[in-house]
Length: 169
Image (cartoon, rainbow, N blue to C red; front, side):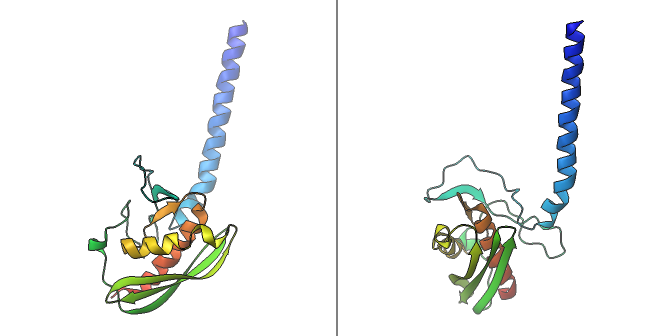
């Protein structure tokens, strides 16, 4: 009867792993739904031509009434919305820190992005000037994730998104 005992043990382990997974999912899903920049964007299999950037894009999946754009990939400059000229500020926060940006709009387009406050675990030099240039070139807050600076990238994208919400025409 050694096989019957082994089969029972395997079944018990399978049930235990399933219960642990289900408990973790139930515990973390509300937190993921509450985060408008949760990492649910698919990972592209194509290689990025930009050094230091992965092919994953930051995208919004907000469950609030003020939903951000829901595209799963960065926009092209030709599809960029028109914004009111001026300088707008925004901030982003997560458990790893906060950061703020100033976004300058000239002739309805993003002309300059500057990180005005940075209080994150990793140095600012990991994302600056890479991400501000990315926002300007793509004319959107939906940007590529910097490898090794995922939390900073999400905070930066959230800050730019908040600033652009203020700039909408």
